[in-house]
Length: 108
Image (tube, rainbow, N blue to C red; front, side, top):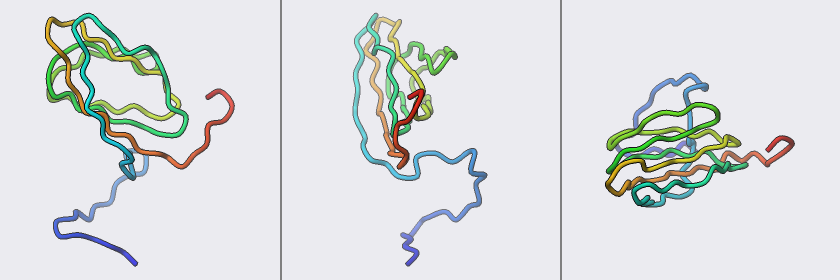
């Protein structure tokens, strides 16, 4: 049975651009000035960060990028990532996580 709610959008999306087929959790995170979350990776889920307030930089794999309020950041499963607040104000962000259904394996 195909269940839809009022307002659902029916659109064809190339699978390489699809992420978070389900949302397993939403967490509000706060990061004080000059602090970082240590590099880590998740074997079985991907994440999206929505930056509510603040600015800093994020490292995903080997790529480093600046972020600021309003940005949306995608973090694939099994990818090292860390986030740093290099500003003078608190960084607040929502972390949306979705399990991929895949088990951690070699190299993970």
